[in-house]
Image 1 (tube, one colour):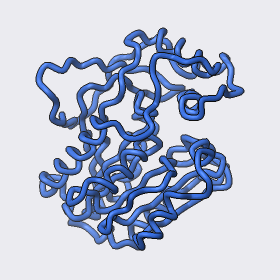
Image 2 (image 1 turned 180 degrees about the vertical axis):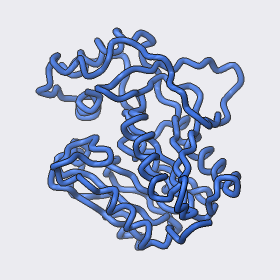
Image 3 (image 1 turned 90 degrees about the horizontal axis):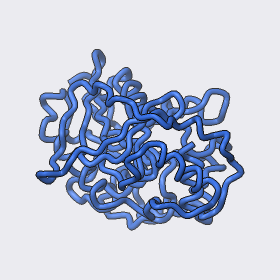
Image 4 (image 1 turned 90 degrees about the vertical axis):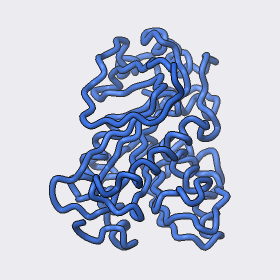
Length: 300
């Protein structure tokens, strides 16, 4: 459901989706789940914890994040020494943290890559879950509501991404990773954050970047921009906002390494891929790319 809302907020048009979709997002809150090993990232004193956890379909999601955290998911065997910080999406209005965070991290860890799920700060939305769901329904009908997705990465989310990179590198030895092989991967809004870090973080930029169905507009690509892996479906609404593939073109114009996968279909929000669609198995392509780039060198 949240993907339909993002279409409305970004393109300013109503979608053909109706109220029948509302049950996909629960009207009830749920308790915050256990997050073993979670690490609090720096936050200003006195900032209250306003998190609201809820179900989005059959998976857990969170919004109103005011205190960023990082949750390590480490390999139990076959560690490669590589690390990936995973940033879920949600339009900077919430986080699809199970679908685009924990599940992705477990897959990476199972393939020898230390993963760290970033729960970054998002924009405020109504505290009441029923009120939030009702406003989403209004947004789907094309009405204006009290929140909107920003055009690009908000400063708090960017700061959280930067803090996550610095923390993983500072503690690399304890996690069994190479500080020179710490990358960043993000989905949707997390993809916006990923490319912002590749563009603006300078010496703190990730060693490699994987924005998945991200903002596809052109980047100001620095001379030291990291190798980039991009995946998006041809019927993704974010591609409807641009002509061609400006993100890819800007990287190529800067003569920086980029691998681009354009799937024939799959829409927005396919996460690790949907069985029976062209997106199925794309994570295996990502793993091969990491190997070809030299980031999977063997056990540390």
